[in-house]
Amino acid sequence: MPNKNKVAFRFAERKDTSLILRFIKELAEYEKLSHEVVADEQTLETWIFDKNKAEVLFLLEDGVEKGFALFFHNFSTFLGRAGIYLEDLYVSETARGKGYGKALLTKLAQIAVERGCGRLEWWCLDWNKKSIDFYLSMGAEPMSDWTVYRISGERLLEMGKKTEAKPLSDVK
View 1: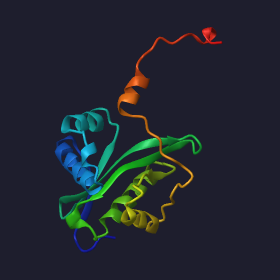
View 2: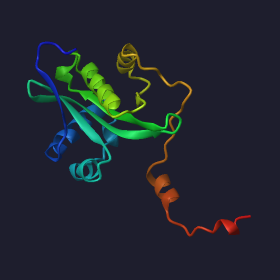
View 3: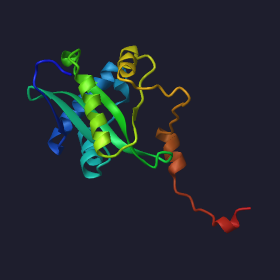
View 4: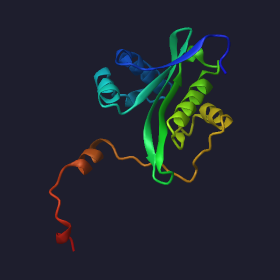
């Protein structure tokens, strides 16, 4: 568990939107993906607080936010229950090495258990050996039999265009 500093957790509120975006940008810089960040405060506020599509948990050291986890619920048909999908886990560079990543992951596991979820899962970049080693040390299991697929951008827009559907009786 974290060292002598006073550590606490709190869920984000609407007023934290700029802080959430700051952490997202710091994470993107760490992952060498800053060029992919198109999120802005208005978009985050809409999707996190108006539409309730994600939650953000902050880790605080002596009352100051030092890390965050952004997550949402998914669903396992095989388990027949929800799980938690961890989209982002990030600890500020100046706060690393204090056990805060472990504390955030442990808190998320507690939330998953409290909510009756069947699993906690996430993706990790293949090159991020430090994070992979950390996750393995926590008892996480890599899902080597699975490949992530994605449809986004123009292809998603193209596929999502509304077309007039034929009644099933017309399909031969």
